Structure formats: structure tokens, C-alpha cells
Length: 104
Image (cartoon, rainbow, N blue to C red; front, side):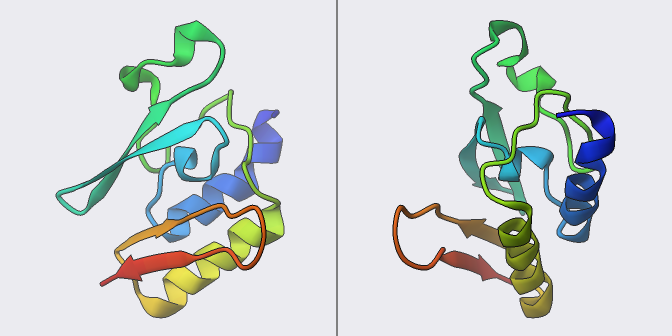
């Protein structure tokens, strides 16, 4: 995805202090620690799969590929913001609603 196309995703991530990896199909959540989430990149291009290449919140990644449609990501961010969650997670389900969990 080109840089200009990622701007809206970066803005949404900024709203919830999230890494771009949170919404990337190659991002793999490694859990929580000290009120921050950790991600591992599972991109098929070997050279970018290392932890040091995972961007911090606000950081960009040229290999970003959204896991969900933009409207769904915006809905997730809306739920997180409206609930004032500082920690949150969502699960992609094959059928039914998309569960979003969080805590203050």
C-alpha cells in the first residue's frame, strides 16, 4: 500500500495509541505488558519480519496490508474511544459480529 493510502490508517491508530500492526494482516499480537501491546511481524518478505522493524505507535510501515475493511477499523476505533479503553483487543471471526474487548 502506498504511503498516501496509509495516512487514514495512521490517523486511526493515533486516536487509540496503537501500532499500525494492530490492523495489519501480517501483525501478530504478542500480548500486553506495561499498558502497551506488542506485535510481531509475520510478513512473507523475510527481511522485515524482525521485531526491530515493527513500528512504534505513530510509526509507518510500507508493508502494511489491512486485515479488515477501513469502515470496520473505524468502527473498532470508535468503540475504543467511546469506552475510553487504554487496553483493547479484537478478534476476527469468520461469521457473526466482530468481538472487541477492552479495559480502562
